[in-house]
Image (cartoon, rainbow, N blue to C red; front, top):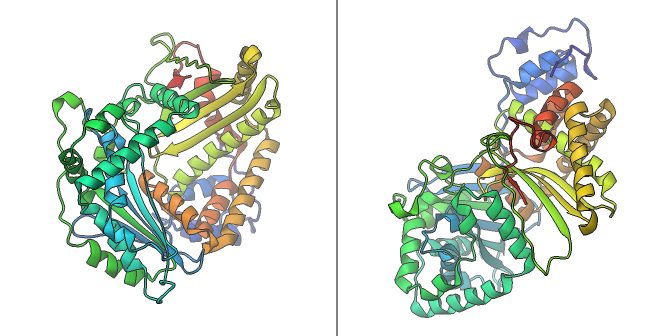
Length: 512
């Protein structure tokens, strides 16, 4: 879009000198903020040029490191809740890493490795909670503990780290394997709800071109029944390597002490090479995991690969007697774009503004007839190794065509006319208000919320900032934002829906 030389709010002095900032090869975010405050930056074009030079600052309290054996770690002191911490061990192996004969093995290994850990049992009766979960791209083990043992005042961090390290050296006793096999088979029966079946259909359709469609974490019941003790041990040996894991420690901890404990606890583990997949697995190489171990070992067919007039749309219809309504889902898959510079952050913010504006417009129609619910999102999904742009609609069964038509009209209108200046200002005001509230919380954001945000940032290769830094970045990228810039992005975001059926236009990744 055209970037005019409109005066920026807060700029002072028409002849303010710009040379000191302009001459620098790199500029800090603080320097740009100061330039706006003092009036050194006078217009949107200059601000945009400076934004291109800014590398985002890292969270001042987060310490990232890696042991000689390849185990990566992050330590983040956090004040809420007081007197507690969490440790999460992320093993970068999930159901997508399984062989065709191992479907459900990552989940099985999770159960045996942690549920059977004697060192985990030492945390019982200490006001600690422990659990684990398996997904396409990883298996995560965690312990949430008081900083000091309630009964004696002894530090709990050594016990928590010992329990997590025990996962890496799990002992697969036959009795424990059989106990967990029974638990998993029971879980498989319980999870088979209509909601789960719908989720399987959506993900299978979205990822029809790769192994995610056949690698759901719960696995295949007949395979689970047949595995031997050695089968499970072999999977563990192939994937539970220190150089394939990331440890997070967050909460009421001393950074230096935690780092020393991590070294002492995990330093003896030996680095190993990745497993080799047999030819019959048809594992695509290179894949996303080849470049980023936090992502699943798959390759995607990105939006734009298929076009109208040349390829057939991917439309998947799922019917079931237990389904009570009509729903329509339109997906587009695009690569995750790392956010490392202020320019990257601006691009992500513009997309977010478009999504918010479209959601507000859709909400006007989602009043029950014919649209019951309408949600539009554009989110990074490390578990799937992509960013997913999704329009999800629940419509009246006997008037679904009208409901779908209404929703699509909003995308056509956004693509053709874009946002109004008033809409843009409302979105900016809401985003800045949310950002300011988060900044005011400081380190009072809970350990769990901080950890979720941190892990997603690490997996997507985004720079991890604190709330104050994020608010400053938000203020800077919104200061000179024009409606023209936003509307250029709006055309791109809406294209696969607004131009559906037009020759040469991109076909959605999936319509369900």
